[in-house]
Image (tube, rainbow, N blue to C red; front, side, top):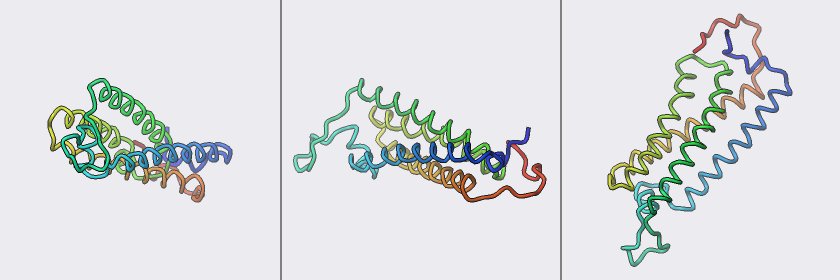
Length: 174
């Protein structure tokens, strides 16, 4: 079955439904990033401080305490599950776009590696492997870039790109 570019051939009501879903999903995703900004976790030291605390720094503006094991497991568990669903749903829609096979495959598979690296890295950093804060930051940035790129591609193809009158099998499926 050739589903590459199927998004372009869907009826308008399905396109608008998907566009609104991706819009709301994006609001949720980027609101989460605003929260990350509020916790000052946008740099490696801030990431480490957010989970390991700063109670040994008397000049700290905001006192942060090390997270307990139960809290860490809850954070890791809920984020891995929710982010997996976010990227699964986004990937399902992205599969229907018209894109080169390798690019599409990268955009739908890589976020799952970033999820494991980001949240597994947070746990390992909390366990004492402090250099993981760099992995967490890099994988989190990559995950966000892929999310934004995927959303842009989906919106562009849903709302602006028209189906071309050419054979459908010019770009191969995954």
